[in-house]
Image (cartoon, rainbow, N blue to C red):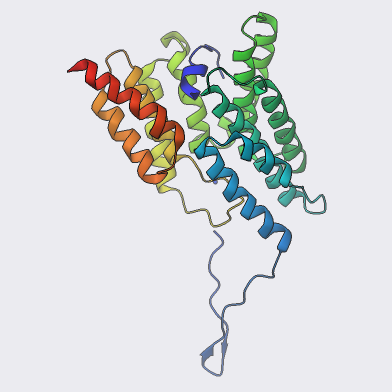
Length: 281
């Protein structure tokens, strides 16, 4: 579980306007359809499968789907997005792996593979904040996996912090950024701007942002975040100093309304909340 892992780390770690139809003899011409792009359409189909496999906790499918995306070098922006989703597949494969017991032995390999894809995405589009967010998170997980090597931990944290600072400077209200930052605030001491209340503030900001931003029409542009923020908040309400189990249950249920097949929330987090409620009776 994301928060449970990152809580061990105490480091500082955005539609085209519709065109008015041209008039001919007083009649509107039908809107022209975009030219077919089979390669792009194929990637869109794979991205949908990646997102579902992530929620379902299907690590086998995530590894296969990662290999199914082949970037097109002649279109740098498209290639950047393709590489982002390749990295996303391995990033989420690792996160899902942390929920398994015993932990899989390929977590570090997945994280390093995701970092390589995010780096390549940024080579094609250096301003693409989403790849910075994903890469920062991966370095955070690598820091956790390196806890027995303090020098490596510091190196990983420095890499993560650099990407987070760039993301905060360019898109401070990005819901996915706030999702990554929340657990860091949760585990940081108040004198370093942290604390449980600070984490809840970030989750609320993220939810407000994801619900008020213009809808993303391009399926290759990341727009996820609302279910994840609800999940983070549910976990946090379960584990805060004074647990709010009703709020935790409400947020978990809200996340499942958005993603009914979310394995982690349905099969792991919600039962943990229910167990805590039973013990509190």
